[in-house]
Image (cartoon, rainbow, N blue to C red; front, side, top):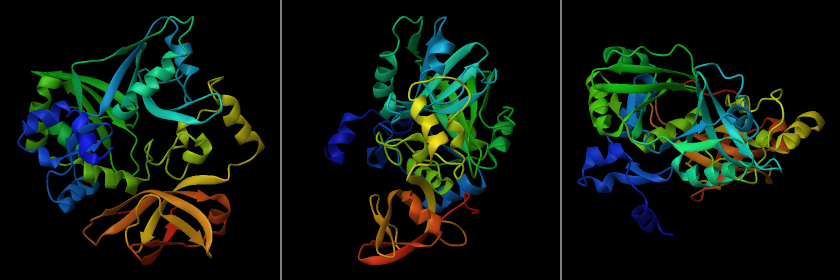
Length: 369
């Protein structure tokens, strides 16, 4: 399927429809299974806002699913890799969804609001994951119900809390927490997500109030930002995306690591869940032979799929890469699946892109921008 054909089959997000009204279709691009605006200002301005200020952006590709029924906690705990029963009353957790062979079928966020449970799933995973989960509702009192009529707007950057304060919203002190806010015509669910280099907020709002909230955040000082800059920044943060950096064939310990702050997706003492036997076997008997790692690039920007080598021997494959325009000059980052034996030698890895060569180094922690 060509990109033109793909674009024609995707729906615009509610915010995108309100902002463009069909007049800026050339700015739209596929993103996580929807059409959203790829760029709203110069990349330098957008990147500066995300990294050093506050950026407002479209999260209309997120889908919400309420998990209902008497068995919801027990059932959901048996379907995902992280804790459910021990979630804080207004907390959240990133989870992987596995099959019986321990292979990753997708990822999602679980949010708890007292006794209520809710999933956040990317639109491009929504149908597949719901079908997978629904197969395992057998004798359980469980219902998966879409939460409709709302869309999400993102606010990202170290000054995000300042912007929220200007519109009368109290920020959240800790990541992976949530709250409610009601004032005037705004009725929001506010969630703070994990971020390695910046604060990340998700603001759920009624679809017909999305453009109003968007304008309020811009008036308060947030920089409107498109999906292209957000995608480059998530690579700089080392945060993997399912379907790009993580694939169905991958095992959890291959795809998540303490290096990128993502090991918290695995909970080793919560009890049984689908695929748990494989996860525990890997933990107790030995390591996997490759790992998803964040790297910094010295050379031309390589395309996804570019092979990495060490002394002319295969060492890994780049899964996603981006250039980040920064005040001190551009920097290039990537995520790559690295062979364990190459990583252990702790040497620069080589690659070829556009007939030019370059090297990469594995980062042991998210970079300082």
